[in-house]
Length: 574
Image (cartoon, rainbow, N blue to C red; front, side, top):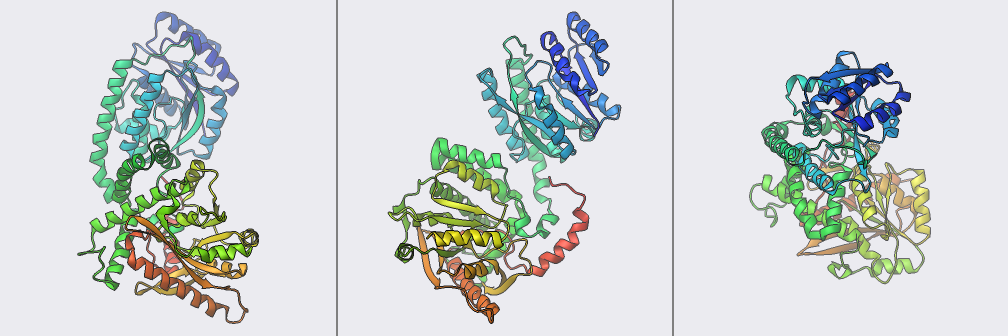
């Protein structure tokens, strides 16, 4: 990586000398762009360029704006053979001690823009701070993504090949709207945006060239232009298919929606509760419905299969189409909000019908734990209803994938003291078994979903009838339940007539047995589980939250992976 510095300067006499002094130890070539400064500043910049041989001074004959100055510096660096440029403002706002971290991130992600994510102190003007939040919102709309966390910070490392390609095809704003526009259009172009927290201050003796009315009008006009450009681009984006993702196993498909996007929903929940979060949720669900072609297809496939086995289903009237699938997505969104309610203890115990909880209490009173085999039908988080009674039962939920990491992080932040413990693992191995043995010995409950194969369980599945077709079920949860040698229950939690109802069924005193005949016992156990899962899924098909091809054969995943691997080996995820 060949890196240069780019510093735009317009009449910053007080800070530029100190800025260059602090940059000198880095020994990086620097393009200092004089954007039509006054005579005194121009004279100072000429002196500094003579003092530091690593500084190249470029001049604009008149003031064109910060964006024009940055563009001049980036294009000059590209023409001289540099691969990356680090933009630093000349006014002393940026923490130059963070430059080594920016460089390391750029080396690790050479194709990406490394952009500062400001961490402000009390010196920030409140008007500027609140204005940034408005821009954040519009940038999220314009990109249909939460990947850009701050589009106004001028502390960035640019990959120059990407910026030059953009400069050759687009005319960008030349003033304070530049930082926003270039980041959004680089994102549209396919460039990844990586954010790095950095301290930003507003020095008492500093000067800012941000013109409140004029620049805010420019930025407003920019957002209007970007919004309508986004609408123009939207049909093409929706029609674009992602074949490599469809070929991947479901557990290798990353969680849709960034950490900060989910954090936004959580923050709105804290401020306005369930109803504000719901108001924000519907546009989000609409976006995922429009752009999630794979999930949409899986939803239709499942609902059509339910319709085949139960043609007169009261929730699936008429021919299955996009309206049914949209209701399916909305049901998922509502369940996610209920999940947050449950995690924050805002879902009262009297809102959950749990008629036979005594089955578990009797077990726990004897000092013994148990395994609850659950599924992704309904709302598994409502199992906190078990521990919210006078009996303080500890519940451990196994999360067998990394693809929900962001959601789980936010849940933990919403209520760190929740009695529900999420244990996130990528596969069920010896370490997991030892941990769960301790939980069972301490009289705790272990909840394991038995309806999803992991990416590492390919070839270790049992096919069982489900909705009229054979579907792969993982062996791991049932083998683990046998190793724990404790009572096993089935648990389903479904929303019915505005209330949640927990269905608890005794499954087996133990799944442990002699080595001989183990596979036969395993097939029988999975067959019984599949039958009960189908029974409840038929009753509430819109609460089926497995948005992938549930019946796809395990060997098909392996063949698809081998076909797509050569063509995607040199690609980077967007």
